Amino acid sequence: MELKQCVNSTLCLEKKPKLVVGLKGSTSNIFVDNAAYRDFLFQTFQVSSSGMESFAMVMTSLSNGFPVLVSRGFSNIASG
Image (cartoon, rainbow, N blue to C red; front, side):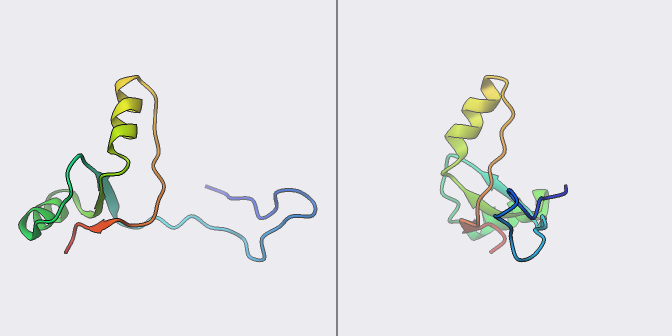
């Protein structure tokens, strides 16, 4: 994916932006606060973070046939 450095002729970033893809994240309807379950998520799905804030939006979008992308920082560390 190529990201533009400038929005217009007068508004530009100092450095060329880049997309950095890290480990996988997940969303659920529960708060993951169990070390054994976090280990299971990481070992089975390579999920490194888990959050519950996006769950309703993702389920609503997918249930109605709309693609969805959640972009955020980390929430709970699923890998321990």
